[in-house]
Amino acid sequence: MIIAFKNKAADNSLTSRLVSAWTNSPWVHCELVFQSKDLLCVSARPGEVAVSARVFGEVVENDLWEFYQLPNIDAAKEREILVWLFGQSMTEYSYTGIIWNQVLHYAHMANGQWFCSELAFWVLWNYGILDSTFDAPANWSPAELRSLVKRSCVEIDKRSLLTS
Image (cartoon, rainbow, N blue to C red):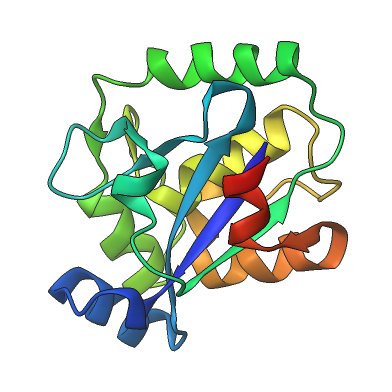
């Protein structure tokens, strides 16, 4: 399993510009990428049913992404995580979570709602993928999660994903 981080230069959407301004970082979105499922990308995305899956090529349209191999995940654990994520597929995107946590810096988890880095942190922590002291998942921006991931995961090249 891989986690991917999108640089704001990958698109010039209003959402990317706002996240970048709020977090003072160019890292504006993250996706969980399932290697055992032909690089299926799962994330919480604004403007869609919150937690949804897309084909890799629909998500990663350019080279302005970074990819990190997550440790200790076999195909069985990927399936377990994917089943849990699909159970979240009828939840809403957490616009209130973004405002409370990323703009106002006030810890607030909206039940039944997710934004990308909140969802990814919860998965990484809950499934024991990253060794981190628990913190409210909603406190993590894409940039902060990327910093945590960089400390313990190996960065991989997009081309190696497409050829494996």
